[in-house]
Image 1: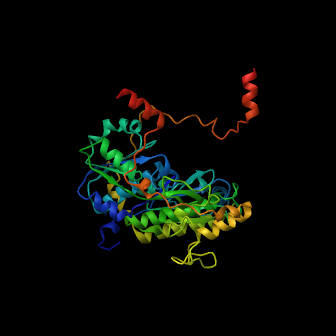
Image 2: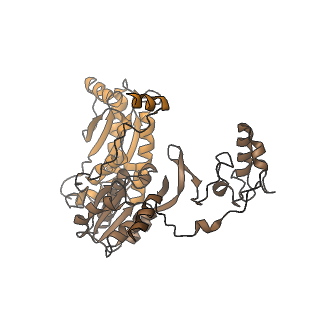
Image 3: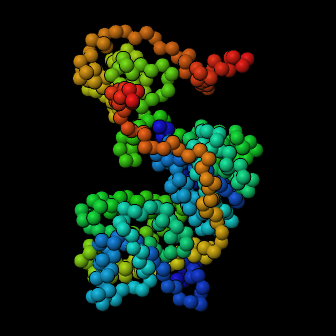
Length: 226
Length: 189
């Protein structure tokens, strides 16, 4: 799941300076779960922007709509009939959603209301943590299901380094040493032997951005068409 | 009321300011306490409009914000005492929600003191009356909600969504464990 947080209200306020009619488009998938840009959060942000404008005596209309996802074209289509009425659109999706909305409705001003943080998991109510950096070459089988690319500050695939200190990282004493976690996990699993294997250097060319991926099935049919 | 801040001016200078207060009361504790205050013939501020809710855990920050948007001078949520919630932790959730809503109010520049959470057990009729008076006093001290003057202006709201052309997949099958044996038995039939 993509985890995001809302930008400070001041920043959003500064973005919409001078616009009178505003539509807030929410996204009902990842950012709704991370309590940043779902239907509820859209309602709250819209209410806040309305109250703020009323308090300052500015004319401003803020409407709300939430779509299932902003990263699929199908869900963006129904917005077409509304957008003409608005001076600016605020999107409470992750960076991908904002861009896709801006791409679909070229010529409209689309503004982001969130800061996208990471791909992560829900630790507990209101707490999320990063688990994946989308490195395109998963090695979790080697490491007992703990990702050194995400958790290790040095991205070591053969760890730990000399900086591990009582299970903490030398880079930040608050953070766990990924390789201590991996060792303990492998110990529990009875697979310590496995760690003796030296991992080959990682292929960082796979993470070249921007990534683009075609499903195998579609690739074949595309080639046939050509 | 002689304050020159625009927010503190009465809506209509000719009429004395009478605060409007919205009280979201949980049906098991605070609402019963309100009932009791009535049967005890206790006198409390008539400015309080009580809204009965099943549990304060139902309260959402948007309900509180909307009350202010619509011109309420003060809002409070009254729930059970700690550990007494009929639904185990509804009042704890409401306390979080109210704290969050206070933060949202602070962000937009409306006094967060206008919003409060109270614990009022079912047997505490006098406490209900006292809290109602307290909140009315707070509203009088803070003056009218500056949004009252602008509530009539159309400032937008929720768009009516067209029916979803691509409704999410039915959830019934998600999470259902299908064992190999079941698949095999299906085939043999």
